[in-house]
Amino acid sequence: MSSSPLPAGRLLDGVLTGVLDTAETAVPAHALGAPAGVDGSADVAGVAALLARRVRADAGRPLLTFYDDATGERTELSATTVDNWVAKTANLLVDTLGVTTGDTVRIALPPHWQTAVVLLAAWSVGAQVGVHQPGAATGAGAAAGAGAVVGTDSHDDPPVAVFVTEQAVDDPAVVGDGAEIIALSLRPLGGRLAQPVPGVLDFAAEVLSHGDRFTPPAPPANQRFLARLAGYYARTWELAATDRVLTTAGYDTPDGLFGGLLAPLAAGASVVLCRHLDPGLLARRIAVERVTAICAPTRYDPLQPAASEPADPTRPPRPDTPAERATPTVRHLTTGLP
Image 1 (cartoon, one colour):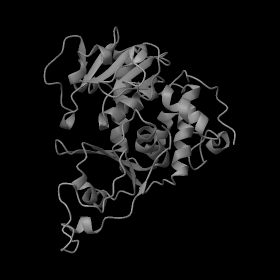
Image 2 (spheres, rainbow, N blue to C red):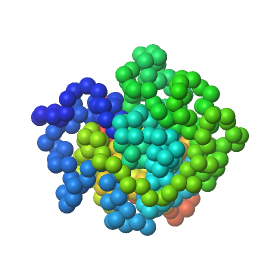
Image 3 (tube, rainbow, N blue to C red):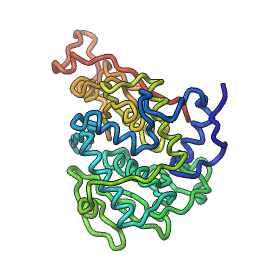
Image 4 (tube, rainbow, N blue to C red):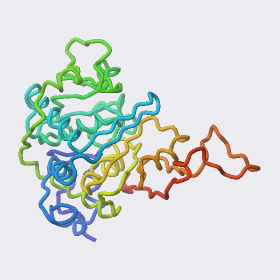
């Protein structure tokens, strides 16, 4: 099998460098197909086009359902709502932060519905995206094997904008020097920062004032490759519009990036994003949310009891709710990439 025809090494424009450098050597070029939609019916040039196609197909159907089991939050966003948030964030990037095609945007946020919005918005404006684990060292100062994350390398251009949690605004290893800093509280209902921070933009306070329409520029060449990879994994995993993918994987990993966001988007499917997942709630969540696939670093078995509630061998299994009794068989998604 031949590899991707793109040159080896760092991919310069519009993409996650580390993830795609790995993927381009692992995915045969013929498997990617033409740069068209999953169904082959229309050219899908970049990530913004994937989102636009999902909105056209079924604007009102949920695209992203978010759970945080530490706070009890459940937020459901239709394709239209996601599109509106992405447009507002893209306008924030361009109008307030001055981001242009080819600029680097660093995202140091945990799995969250707002993280997905920021990612999609950064690609929509044609930015080069670097995804980092919150609190991880970045760039040339990161020691090998310590804090190094997928989606970055030692040659990344300095970011013009950095998205961080409010707890990380003073961490120089995360925010760097000279970039605009945008902080997110990640509290339920998109709440503002607990306290204003001088020199730091409050995402929740800034984004809502921007328009909910955005016209993306032509995507960079390697972002088109990213969209083709999304289609490739959607086909490989046989995802369809009826699928609901539950994910706990971070967007700084290939599995989280493709299984938890881009491949479901390319397939017209929906995502159930879980932060601080309580394994004891998994079986019921799979049933209630009609989950058909799981993307997670840990292979969850929804039919096993929670660790804190060991099974009683003298008692027949009896789920607590009808939803748990209806737990379906789900498949596990993985790219197989490191």
